[in-house]
Length: 202
Image 1: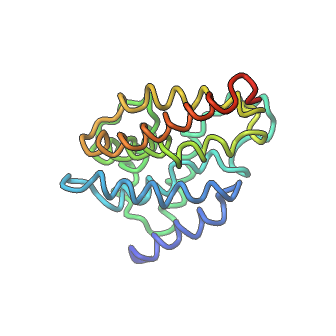
Image 2: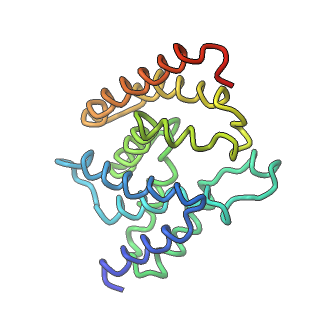
């Protein structure tokens, strides 16, 4: 496959595999954010594209454990790295770049310590996706279908921690600038929830 062909294969695969279906939107938004964050930096766009689109493969239904007890212990990252590396090579992705994709995926979560330029960009982008209106939607949609969040009151602390802690984890000046309006929006939402529902949110 040519480069455009392997990129099309990635998008088509994730479009089919992203379940629940609302999870699909995270990938194109994440890649778009990496483009903003990588501007002026020496980043490999093939690595950013592949890592952004494949990084959450192990959280999709059909790829993660079904048993609730196993799911609680599930670390999707090793599975995602192994499976995405296999798939990318099959689609004609440059073999010499597979390890860079794996490294970006390995360190894409907020508590990780990314080292490569692409990994730093991906992690900052993923943090931004947990803030603002989009971050709120991504969290709230889990209520009732994720065993961790039975009610809205279960997910509010997640949003509170995101607003309080995630901005400080951003590495890039551009990421910090983009976070400002997103954090403000999240704080407005949380304030409104407290004002409107108080202790009756459930």
